[in-house]
Amino acid sequence: MTVETPVRFSPLAAWQDTLAQLPTGIRVRELPHLTQLTLRAEPGSTAVRAVAACLGVPLPGPVRAELSGDVEVLWMGPDEWLLVAPDGRADDLLARLRSAVGEEFATVTDVSAQRTTLALSGPLVRSVLAQGCAVDLDSRVTPAGSCPTTLLAQAPVTLVVHDDAPAPDVRLLVRASFAAYLAAWLVDACTEHR
Amino acid sequence: MQLITCPWCGDREEIEFHYGGQAHVAYPEDPYALDDEQWAQYVFFRDNPKGPFAERWVHAAGCRRWFNALRDTVTHEFLAVHRAGAERPSPTSTAKGQEATR
Image 1 (cartoon, rainbow over the protein chains, first blue to last red):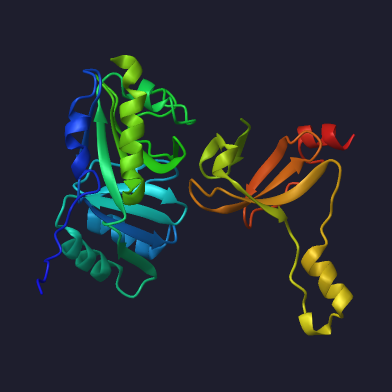
Image 2 (cartoon, rainbow over the protein chains, first blue to last red):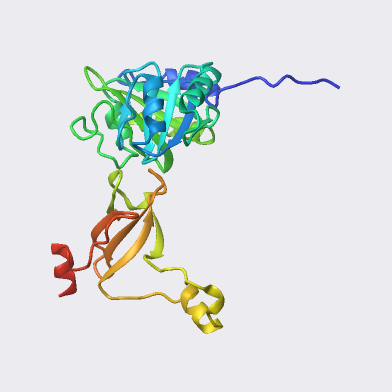
């Protein structure tokens, strides 16, 4: 009997080549295995202040993201934030945050395996996304630092607008099980720009 | 498609939301004191007005929070939305509501 060692693989590993062949105005690549932690805490509480002090950035308000620190903080709900950091930071961050929170009430949970991230950049990004997303993606309504959680082509996603100028840079956080569907949809949505 | 205003996220498409029935239906103070008919009234019977109706909705595809809305059942227009625990808007407290109750 052979024992297979579990190997970590990203949900879009098989899509790399297809995504590399999109039209020139849009560049899509997967950022696999990012560390993602869900923070639940009452806004305005001591725990929230402790977390903000630990991360060195304030926790953002509704539909906003705080992208200036080395850990990105995305607003997911009135008492919920998603902390996004590079691969391999989970244990260190969990330990630091839990000791910062101490006896106060807050929960920090590692949810890194739940979602994968797609990085979209290029001048066509907004027009491609607009084909499946009802949120107004114009930079006056959804500027850099916005993070609406919504439906893209019926699939639940969190959109993070990183940059506006010169070309939009948008991150899409999508459930691992929806990732291949969304990649297929993106390829299809780019057809008219070929 | 109709846009519904989430008190946290703003205007979103209606498919992001789920309906939660009539709002402000209080759980009986002492459920054991109710007879079968009173219990059935609490569990199954709801108002069915023609006009403004206080309802519960959840923004299932967004912030996933429950909130209350005042909706006109004739026109499907949302007259007011408010966060759970916030003060309830009355049908006549909004300009649109006054129109609807007329």
